[in-house]
Length: 224
Image 1 (cartoon, rainbow, N blue to C red):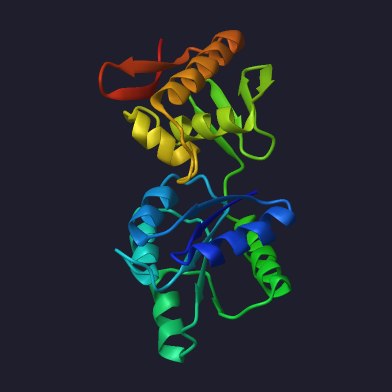
Image 2: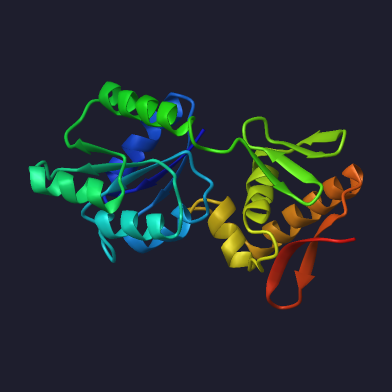
């Protein structure tokens, strides 16, 4: 399960990440509201933990913009502001839950368990484009009776493509969707994983392919 932390206090973000990773979650971190929107719109995450007081755009604004973008990922607002009007503003912006600082690791995990149980009622477990189907639980990519298991990073890149069929994705966009903000990922890494996925599509015999748009990026298209 993958969690996005949007928190400008880097020491707190790192502490949250350690708690989550110790409990088996995969974590990405960004440190301002603008990056929170960019990463959140990738639709790669099972839960977004979002501070309210952020640079560039506050947590209420981030939540509202994600909801306007039809992102249904559960959002847990995390803040020192515990006044009732602030909580109402958070829920009205589209947040699912609200937790005030300071908090205990056990309290955090209880909130996440509640959110993921709720999420399980509404989130699709598979993405399908053309003759391809990507299982979001097992990371299996299928074409008809053939199935192949993707590595974690191959899965992240494939999910970006299948979530945006026909849309041109630049290398920067793919990096933002499939790698965390602190990584030293280069264009060469993107090219390598696109190549890996193309080989997987060929192995499966899929008529869906990744097209290169010269000097712009890539897009997933269905042939035939």
